[in-house]
Amino acid sequence: MSRKFALAGAAALALTMTPLAAGTASAATEQEAAVTTVYYSTASAPTFRSVINAGAANWNRSVTNVRLVERNSGASLRYTEGNDPRGSYASTNGHGSGTIFIDYTQARQYNPTRIAAHETGHALGLPDHYSGPCSELMSGGGPGPSCTNAVPNATERSRVNQLWANGLVATNASERVYETVYGY
Ligand SMILES: [Zn+2]
Image (cartoon, rainbow, N blue to C red):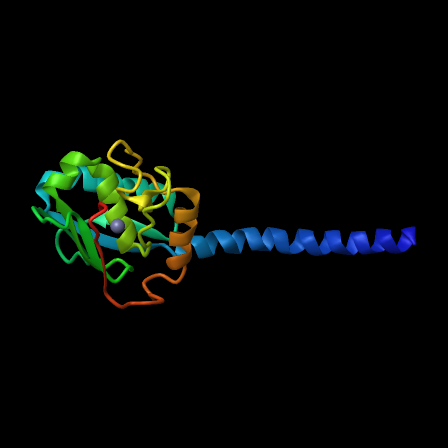
C-alpha cells in the first residue's frame, strides 16, 4: 500500500516536473506573441490628451494581451470632445475600433482620467456595470463624482486579457454604443 503510494507519488512528480519547465517557456512565448497593438488618436480631443494617455497607461500596466499606443495617423480608435447632454460615450465594436466622446460638463463633474479609462474599457470589450464599487472602473459614474479611481480591478484585467487572447480576432464585432444618463 505504501509502496504503491510512493510509486504513484514518484510518477506524479516526474509528470509534474517535466511539463512544468516546458510549460513555463511556452507560456511566456505565447503571452509575448499574443500582444495586440491598438492605435488611438487624440487629435480631436486636445483638451483631454493627457488624461486619455494616463488612462491608456493604466490599461497598459494592467493587461498583457493588448497594448494601447497613441498614433494620430491610421488609428482605429479615435477620441473626440465637446458638449453633449448625453455625456461621454463610446461607440465601438468593443475590440479596438470606434469613437470615444468626452463631454466637457461631465469631465468637470467627474474625474476625467477615470472617464477616459472607463470609455477605453468599452473599446477593449467591457460593458457598463454602474452598480459596482469605485474600485471597479466600469462602474463609471455609479459611485458618484468623488470616485477618482482610473485603474481596472483584477476581474476587469483578466476579462480584457481573455477577450484579447486571440489578438484582433473579435468574438463579437458588432458595433455597440455605450452611453447613459448615469454618467459615462
Ligand atoms: Zn460606460
